[in-house]
Image (cartoon, rainbow, N blue to C red; front, side, top):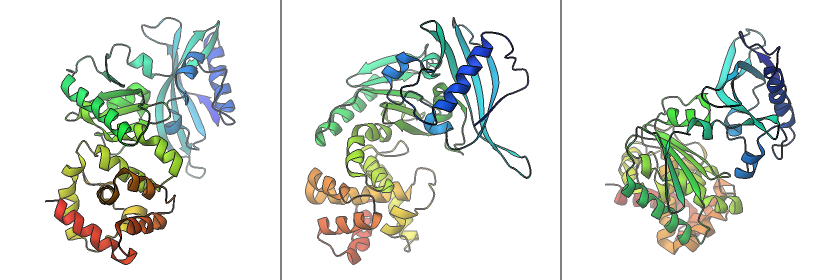
Length: 354
């Protein structure tokens, strides 16, 4: 990585000089390992297994790192804000293609400067409510819907119990806009397209980030990811089978699985060429709340469950990472030749969708 400083970033004097050196050293060391790391807050390393909460977003092979701001953090003692641009630069045109603008902090710990996440600092004035195994974090201007949150906490418990999994203590951060929620994570810019409603999950650290004005406390798809991650780790199903499992249990786009079925049924009526192979390997792009990949795989999951319960779902997941093997397994569980599985799937959605 090439680390440079932008205009107006003066690192000639302490402590900015030392802080920049810590940041540069961290970027170099993290290429070998992300834990343990002496340049990151030890308290955060104890709190979160994957302690750099932005690592999955900002470290994607883009080589140009520009520190655009290094200044004392407003209202925070012995704390500096580091604002960073991650980009690629075209060799021929010199055009800059930004991936992310993000913030990380430098704090004093045991007499030295170390890096720390934006999340606990950006949400220090947010409301915090714990119900069961879920701790909800929400902006101070938001009115907490306790009954809706309690239903979500019960969902987590029941889902874990159904699959005989431990209940995960989960942090659930939400606002009306996904971009705003990711901003408190530290992402000031990240390419989301028009997707201002939705969610992201960090299963390793048991964190969920949601943006939805209508389903703030009840966006369960990402919670399903956290609860059911042990099954994904154990069986390594295809990505779309995994998302189908989460959509069947937790819905998608703020809607329940049953609410998604009418849109899927209508789409399949208009597109007779779409098959289960299409769904699992190259589904159409999401349009609004309709995601043919997520919803179509969820329908197959529901069919498998109807045939043999949780045991059948586990058997289906255990087919491995090959989509073709997953479809052969589903056909076997449903007692249908593979050649007839698509017709059976379409018929089930047609009956269940309206």
